[in-house]
Image (cartoon, rainbow, N blue to C red; front, side, top):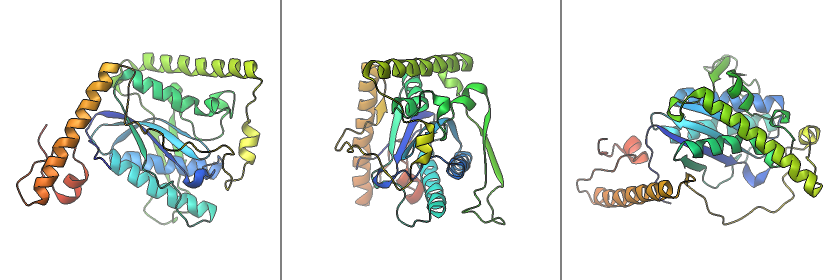
Length: 295
């Protein structure tokens, strides 16, 4: 497994699915609340800006801005906390998340961020589950983001102790970082893009005779269920996203340079020789105090 460079001031799309593609995230009040509670707690703890979350029945997406370079700590804390909470809710003990590595895609430029914001918001529509984003009964932060509302959650009573150290309630604003440009312009473009996706999917279903599953049917599904279609296997797992060919080439070259420098430093470090790891070395710097070059 190749090392990942973890730098501050980066946008990411985080995706993880449930084990065996089960509907362990199937929307209901307790699940939605617990997801938001654990997400907010992890984001506040790790100084992560959350732009937009969306939970599907067996996976989730969240677009984040990592200001200080702590996204590995964020996803570790969030996944552990929510998995234990949700297992307690479902009365189960086995692993909650799929064993594969969390999908983390670096969003190289503004266009990539807007593409993934649109994809995340419209995911229930693209999967033909509901006709409009606001019909989705699970967590979807689009309305809160567009209307400037905070997201809130209360401490899940099925898992956390009433007299424990976790807050009774957590609250956080979904944000558009200034690095993307004027906030009003970004939100307007996002709104237009999502509406375009909704209309395109309506036209596609009219052409093919397809139908959406519908909110009621989604809520009626058993959390023990899973999709009837076969899971794609051995697909590519991208680490970066951008429409620009040159930006993609540049990002891939930076990744390659980091991997080579990291491998050389690690080899010398294990041999007991002096070694300075490249910028963005995360695990060894945090847990083994390995020296890292300054920015």
